[in-house]
Image 1 (cartoon, rainbow, N blue to C red):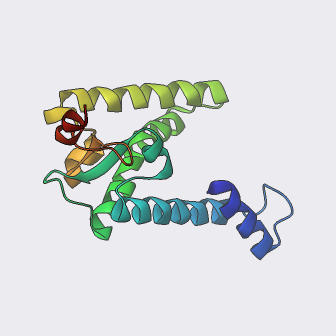
Image 2 (cartoon, rainbow, N blue to C red; image 1 turned 180 degrees about the vertical axis):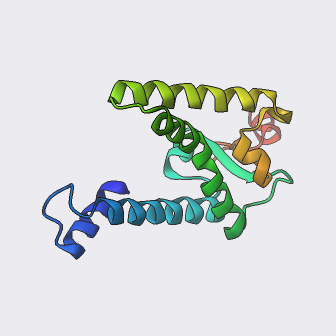
Length: 150
């Protein structure tokens, strides 16, 4: 998704060097990724990767997400990265290794917060009232039908 969107952006803007137009490319990709996640979360509850892992996102009540809730979940999911990157910037991190340490540490803290929340939800899921659940494989029959077949 990012590669195709980046190619479309560079073709549309005539970008010939990766460092030219970096900010506008980042903003564009932020919205493209947002549209991707909101579309899949509201239609099937699964992105392409979530289908592979047989996971689905839904509300706490077990219903599909509305576009507003999906957009809120997308924005709040950035809490995985932004606070630790901002802290790294504030602390004066200069090398990739320093930023990586801050990023991994922040993500570990975020994961730890999830372990403390009710039902072990991630913070962004807890805040917007969503959850990730296991989904049945495509074409799977309920267990009662499988028992009758055997």
